[in-house]
Amino acid sequence: MDLNDMKIAYPGLLREKLPSGAVRYRVRVEGDKARRIPLTVTPEHPQFVEIYHAARAGVRIEPEASPEDRAIRGSIGWLAAKHLAAMERAVEARSLSPLTLKKRRGVMKVLTSKYADYALDIPQSKLVELRDDMIETPAWADSVIEGIRAMYRWAADRRLCAVNPAIGIARIDRGKGGAIPWTPDDLRKYREYHQPGTAAHLALTIFMFTACRISDAIRLGRQHETTIEGVRALQWQPVKRDSAKVAIPMLPPLYKATRASKVTGETYLLNYRGKPFSTPDSLGQMFRRWCRDAGLEDRSSHGIRKAAAHLLAQEGCSQYQIMTVHGHTQAKTSEVYTKGVERWRLARDAMTALEVMDW
Image (tube, rainbow, N blue to C red; front, side):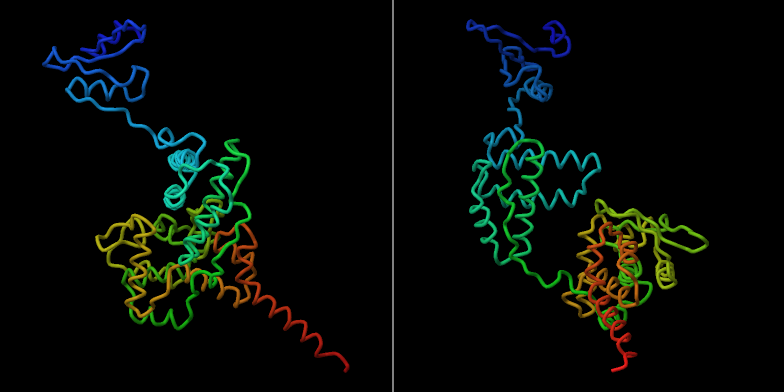
């Protein structure tokens, strides 16, 4: 940048050559020419304009350093900062879910609170210790290790590290199969408490007759209704990355429920202000409250999704049919719902064949 141009663009900016040969920049405070504030950056710095204007107003500020710049280069804290910055850019480009970024931030907070200054080639035993420190919340402990493993995979792809110390660390959450599937009695209790026309009743109906995730439930509305081969249908692209597009018939109970509400908006489900739910978490909290009101303490929306899959399997649907309803792209994801049912069906058919044997 030419000095004359700077004088025009930045009144009061002084470029001074020191006896040592170095160059410094100072700014005359507007309204007080005798007072000069030295700048902490050169004109090439991205925060130069902000710092210059502050100096003209008589305030000296330091440039903000990014988390990556503040961390020790080559440390876990440095890598975590780079990883999150890359994920933030991916969210801005709409190639990554904000919910994934939110969860990963939580993982990085756990990791860096203990090991920020450790070198990237941290001993695996340290990560095992980190996992074991969270033994009281095993599902979260496993999520933390998975997040760390993903960070190192990302780093290895960019040649920032050569070894992934999180590979091979076993899970400690044996779990109970995840969310509890709803039973017919659960569905009855909920519907008896929450009558048609209420948001609570509509939410249950949407979850049951679309098997959608809560991240999609907050978006579904009349704009997703269509007609396919003469059949009224719902069609949408799930938010979850790599999910297949879903197109399913809009059965009468669902259509009736969506028309029973006295308040309508751009989405089927609206909060108490008559507005769409802003996040899946906000709907999730409300749905858990509706469940508690109906005497169902340990139930969730994902449990309805599982119940729908089990009912489809029991009614003879194949895992590939369930895949199309749930938006799965991998057969193994839907297999968990059909495996037991199909094994019984195969065994029943085999035994039927034995019935005709001359014994």
